[in-house]
Length: 447
Image (cartoon, rainbow, N blue to C red):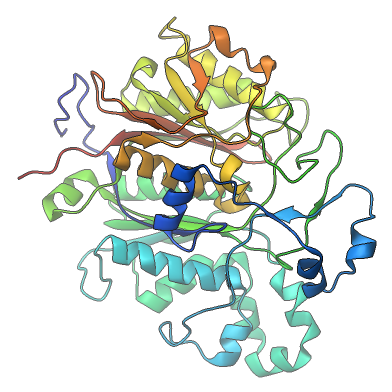
């Protein structure tokens, strides 16, 4: 079964529709503000003040003199605010629950709302697939509060803080009866969760899937330490693809998408932000310089597989939302991996734009892939490509002049072509588990 999209390669019958989205990102309480920041070209990283450090219990005079200290991070606004009554949680249970779990509960519900899907009335199965960053709330807060641990109880503290329970708690609170799985592959967790959600929809294990990720660590305003040649930026600015790139800035964020099989979404009259035509997962094994290093071959293999599953040729893809961590090693390897795949099909130069949301909001760790997915889905929905920030002058090691790619440095309209607008999206985890999606603009709705 396939669906016409007015091109020579119609949508495959197992394509997946994004029918709802929700998220919270640095300087964006919702996706309307997130898109506004992207269109305006805002760098949303917070450079911490002395008062920020004091609020976390640090002495600014001491911290700022520590070698390599950088006072920057992408922050969420008021992550401690939570509608506990809506989720039927007692005060002590709530206080003993990692705010990552709390934020995820609210954002997942918002994605269901955006999809027009009420779990109390929906007849099908709803699944949950999500990634989450390491818990810092329990060691930094709960363990200092023996009274809270005694009042909440061991079970509530455990369920509220372990990674294992984030998906199943949402399933319990909202009576969701599809698969509920916590997915942990480091930085690629949330996009891997999307791939696994798509598989479960395609295998009819569920009829709606919530897929996402959350990263929120404490204290929020603590900054980090830069090491030469390491992952983090020397000055608190994330510069994807730039000659001066020195690393990423880790940030906080949460995002969830609601997914359906395209046939069901069209039959139900749902809004569709974008379509996932193809998706693929792999691990790059040991053919790289270190465990944490990226691999050209590993990345090119997962990209080629996703394109093959999608049934599209690389020359029909006009945008890539890259992992784009702004490291001297990672950015050239990522472009080389993409070029290896595209060059199998075309010799055309600089026809495909490349961007990275990390220039706007930094690296959201386990939630990073979702921020890229939401950006790309909104770009397809609005038919506009936001600029990638802080990337000029470009890194000459990228070799862009002879490649199929150019870095998108300005807000531009996304022109129509011979095929529907299409994009690729990558997310790579430390340890080598990689995910790539091929997205396409939504089919025109029926009258």
